[in-house]
Image 1 (cartoon, one colour):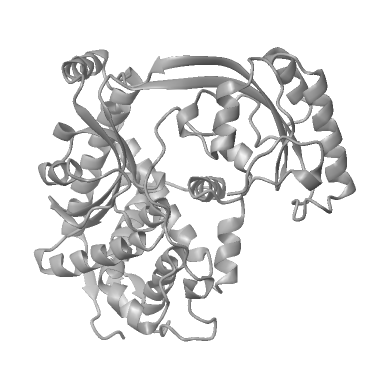
Image 2 (cartoon, one colour):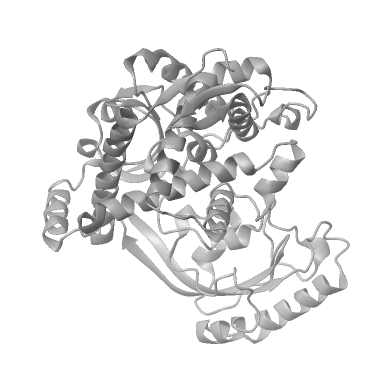
Length: 459
């Protein structure tokens, strides 16, 4: 990653990759995922040539309550997997993924049909926000995902359809669970009391990809699919992107993120594996009730004993009208933005001044106050060092990224024990458990009532 440097000109200051300033300042006060950097994959492996036929769109793979799933639908979903993992796309790869992808598509049709029956409508803006969130979780610029699909000759429609189904199902569950969404103060207090008794025990921050097994006869296919997912994760595929596409848990929309968990909150088989994993590792398929789990251990800590440096800050951002591609050849607008940023550096003294100044400079997507930031979780290291050492209220030198220039001031800096279990964390975990249980119960009921015709040879 290019180094952030303080500078007085474009020629001696490299831009931060992928708008690093904006992304870094959006990090929550939490531990970031750790592990060995993945090996890059050659771009040519992302997808098949555009003119390579992968499926006959006229062939029917399944009929779900009258709705048709075609072989082309399966091929398009396989392309999604290939584009996110770098897996070479070919008819052989589609055949290897076919059985599990078909089951996923059947589940999605059942979910969409039930959402339609309940008159749940997902707006385009919701889908756009979900795509933006996927890009953010994978350190991609806005629009980069669509561009990646276009470069590989793959329509983004398959991803949009999948996201629409996920969002509709989430709304359906939220409506169904109703009053049970209200976690009482008594329940929270009981959980916090248990947490207090667990101080010093190990807690794990996990990502999960859940692959369901709806029929014991499909167990081998599901396990093979899980092993394919794992091999691509080991080769460098982004866990949040793969989880968003293939996990059947409600955490899929959050990139598989299930947060901090104690061993007694996990399935016993998962707890046994996680307790032996190093940070950054990805598990083999773990057989759990209802399917297989693939877990990534992002971090671990002792409950109630995690000191961290937490800062708050304010930032002004001067956006470029076109991306900065060559620091040696900035446009006139980019030079003017740098001049304005230098004025901010020289004249602003304190967070109140920075906040007032930024109200007239920041575009809507660049927060003036990004909230609390845990310094230890910030990258690159040079920026982490800057947040840890710059005097409070002092404006930084201009920090240049490809889409603009940031100037910031640190308002507060304190050492804090962030290992304490907050009421908000307890509420989130209890609600997630209830929603996940309802999701699996509802899917079993939909399968029981459905008429699903699997066409082994197409039609």
